[in-house]
Length: 315
Image 1 (cartoon, rainbow, N blue to C red):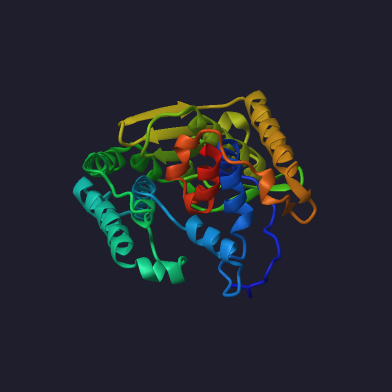
Image 2 (cartoon, rainbow, N blue to C red; image 1 turned 90 degrees about the vertical axis):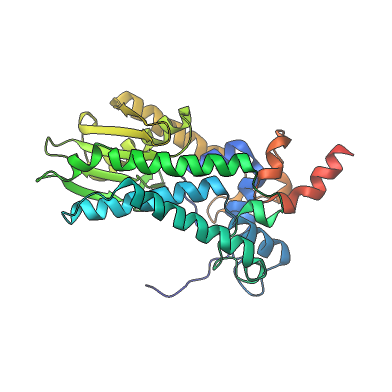
């Protein structure tokens, strides 16, 4: 690992998740990508340090999703080694173990989180004292069971285990360029099957949404551009584990061109809020207004930084 090199401003890049945040709340986008930068430093200004701490918060649904993805990655490793797919009960117990670990950390390590937010797991619900309702706990318990069962029952494992199938990546960060911008793409699973098809798998623990289709379309563009794969050889699979359904999607060259143009347009819009695009220096915070959908604010990681302004806006 190379030596740490301090940067006054973050490096410019683009991703699907960045676009999602940009489109929902510009102030949240500012804090997440700019206002928290270098907040890990001992001498960071108080607001920057606080933004960095708040950026590290998670929530119970995100923790469930992370636990499921880690379990899926473990199954990929087992299949590649020629070992059996674990039982659903084993996968469920691993998911619950991770949930319990984060719950315990959030309950017991609040003081340590204030000092070392990069070392401690902390749930938004505990940090802000909102609590987690019995109804939410019941939903999480149900999803832990359903996702474990669906993950184990997936037809992906038989296909991945076939002789001649080639694993390309699993939960691996990568980038590809669009114009002058590095674009991040992190498919959950990418492999080439025995028919020469490149299969992109994206596991979901929530509900169906149009954004999910847009996300895997970006992954298809990544496979086309990064690996030089013809579009007719690319197949994407959205696996909704708690719903026990899947969507198989293929895209045309024209559709991927639309994806590229939408990403480039998004980049230009983001760059419009930069004081210096060359160095990725943002305009002042005031150029990044709060979302008009104020019902979102209480559940945002950065609520602590915005609550005074929110209170003034309704007084």
